[in-house]
Length: 430
Ligand SMILES: O=C(O)C1=C[C@@H](OP(=O)(O)O)[C@@H](O)[C@H](O)C1
Ligand SMILES: C=C(OP(=O)(O)O)C(=O)O
Image 1 (cartoon, rainbow, N blue to C red):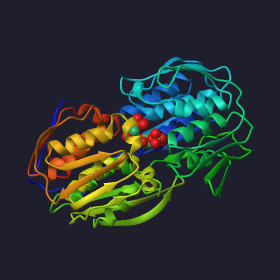
Image 2: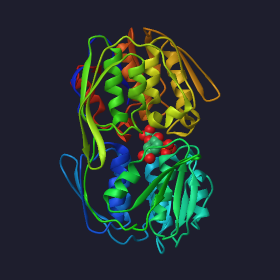
Image 3: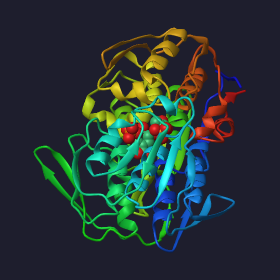
Image 4: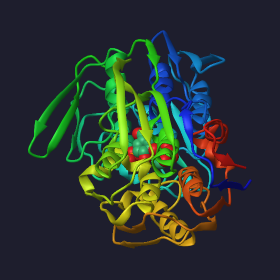
């Protein structure tokens, strides 16, 4: 399925952004590992999260849901399900591999689609095996995990990965041994915040080597209520569109503004974006706020490696904003983009070039030469990557000529309803 973004209308109004993907996966997995009932609202019902929901059912959890993102998970003892298809979702595979590794008597084979089957897994199997995990396979799916009684670990989380950190923490729930993670560059902490909500003890300290997170003595989970905030990674597309399309003004209510996820928004503010936060509040242990962006004249940015973990999935959207800035933007530390759903660095540069924007990569640094306006008039190869598709559709709304993306059905990986949400704001997407 192709999709075309045609310029000429501004985007304005309230964007109905679905729940955060990272928190949705975690609410399901922790709910399935907990005693009793977990009630979740604001759940993202995207393909990736549905893969996690099917997986926890196969492991023995009872899952019910009604309209409007309300889900109930009843956890309990996990059983061996045979094979678990993680689809396109790295989070599903990596978090569940960690969870199963520490459960004696549970055995599972993890598989994924073509893209997921090329993504590296040794970054988590190596620390899990240091804890004593029994894993058959190499650096790629399929992997077979035979759960067992694990020992402890002090894992140094480099490259910064919330998925690896989460896998180690979930594996550590089944042992009393010391389990700690040291992070020179902190990654998103939704697992830690949600574990605390389920009654698990965690301890934090700062050391010269980075921030240390340690599992405490109490590691059993008890079901709870979780309300999930709107996903800042999905909101990035209508909000960047608002920043670059003249006359635009978009509001997202109840967006997750955890500082480990707001790198894009801080960078956009430094670029001169008119961005306003209001109604900041705590919701199920996470901070959410209403976020409003209006069209602005953008300056180029210089993003350093240590800023990347807080915007790792937003780089395609940021690259689009940079294309409309006046001057050369420099984004450093992007090596991890090579191992996402596609080679995102390559896809960004090729897509920008097709749209008439000069961009280049040296090592893991991306340079984008913005001229304040973008020609467009291209067919962009998404490489089957949802975030590349949404980013270039946002670009097409502000370009001189329409932009077509070669595939759009995989947008449902993270943001089902993207087209309708954008159309409701006035965007010409067909
Ligand atoms: O933990 C998570 O929910 C995620 C962590 C990030 O991956 P890494 O852990 O590989 O950085 C991110 O890119 C992914 O979309 C979701
Ligand atoms: C990288 C992503 O997700 P995952 O790693 O879960 O496939 C993403 O959604 O951009």
